[in-house]
Length: 156
Image 1 (cartoon, rainbow, N blue to C red):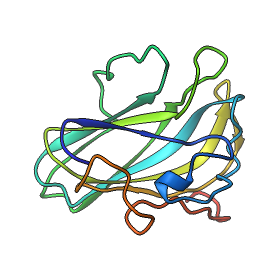
Image 2 (tube, rainbow, N blue to C red; image 1 turned 90 degrees about the vertical axis):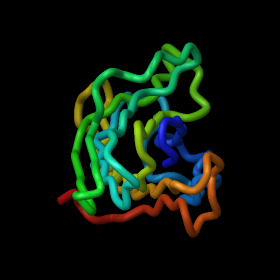
Image 3 (cartoon, rainbow, N blue to C red; image 1 turned 135 degrees about the horizontal axis):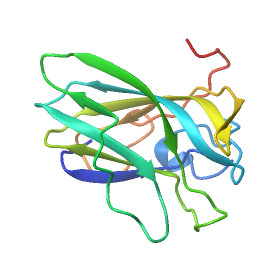
C-alpha cells in the first residue's frame, strides 16, 4: 500500500471480489450477519517504519482509528499480527465494501489472511483468504498483484 493512503476491500458476500483478483464467489463470509472477521495482517517489504490501521467502511465514514493493528519497519522483513476487526454492518450502513486499510508513514506490502468470521462478535466459521496490496499504485492491480484465494485449511 502506498504510504498515507486508504484502500477499501470487500470481505463478505459473494460479489465484488473480481476487482481484487479474488475468487468470484468469495469465501463464504456471509454478507449481513457477519460484523467482524479475525484477520492476520502481515507487513513485508516496507520502505521505512510505519503502521497499518484497519476499520469498518460506513456510508458516513469515520476517521481512521488512533490505534494501529500493527507497526512495521525495514529491520523486520515480515511481521504479522492477528486481530478481530469490525467490517461494514449493512444493518446500520450501506456497504459497497467492508474493510478500509491505511498504511501510515511508509509504503508496505500488506498480506491479510481472514480466518474467522463473527456474527455479533460470536465465532461463526473459519475461512482463509490472502490479500496482497501493492505499494505501486492506489488503483486495483491485475490479479497477479492482488489476489484473494480460498483455502480449505484450518487457521494455524
